[in-house]
Length: 518
Image (tube, rainbow, N blue to C red; front, side, top):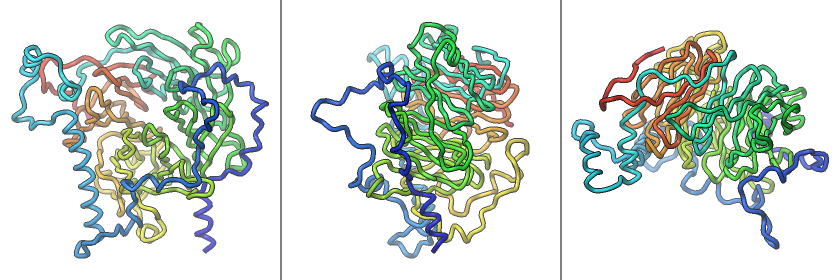
């Protein structure tokens, strides 16, 4: 009973001590930062962050399946394992059906070639969004990339802004660079170079506010720093010399000493920052109030990745070195349910990164078991206290930072895997390699892609569940990469210090990509 009480304590939100922070001591001028939302109207109260009378957990369509080892079903003649496999297959088929409808999927042996479709467009007028995605999803960049920049330090972070106008690269030498990419076929222009003085080891993550006015960066410290991108016209922003880098202090946390923040993410309304930390916790920080408004002792090891499931920002996910992915609902707090809403076992080693599809249901994760997994939140279970603790989960005593993975990713499997598909080929070693979804505009989100320790960029096709392409350039680890939201262009950063973009299209449809393995 004491052990069960301790587990419940770890999975619960903790509000104690959070109201004692004095907002008046903050030097942050919120008038200089516009979250992009209309101000509260007179006489109307703002919707509370947590609802004591919260709606049912995640809604009826996302009802969890019960114990990890024992999903219930009316068909008693099927074993529990068969029932789970059937539900996972159905979930994958649903997703593939959505993607096929979005891109007008046709059998490759019978579909018309691109020249025929272009000829038809000339005769009938413009293409619909689905037809545009149908065409562009069949043509991936090819050939050698263009080198945008070369630094003298390892690059850890590389991603586009939501609207694709900016690409951000974060380096270990305290530098964060933002490039203007409005003109995708022209050389990128350096818009801002941020020099962060208070760094421990490296920049661990960055995020831009939805309106691109505020850039926030994290390091191995409980303090984030926020930079107003429109404060000055100067290209270089040196911390507290040419620009004020406002500290966002997360307080003492759950650990006795200092802790670090591994991952951060803005809410879509620009009001909150979600963070995962080395003290096994997930935090929600209110930018205007300048304080932590909710925190959860979420896991039993470092929380390496956090993300919101969709644009509503109600549901968020956390992934940890304890191998578990957990689901949380901000609407369930205070007098309502204030503990983790569901769990998704499947990885046998720590979670490196989580990336949502954005529909509140599907997401992908990179794991140190050298797998990228595809998930449906609706397959989550509510407890790991039953059979999962009794069954042996195959894992190894090793350190991914300097040792190769001891197992065979194809053979090492979790006995209660809740993922609906698994992709292997890339290497999640030395650092927290990131994975992402391809954009809806140009690919219908048909692909997922990942960096790799070998320096290659791997693209996987969800429809065929096969490797679609491998792009190779970096001479060292490729930790992060991203796909432009509106153009057929990918960009990547590596530990060789280079920032490159991949946008040359093949001359002929079906031309082979560089099939390189690690």
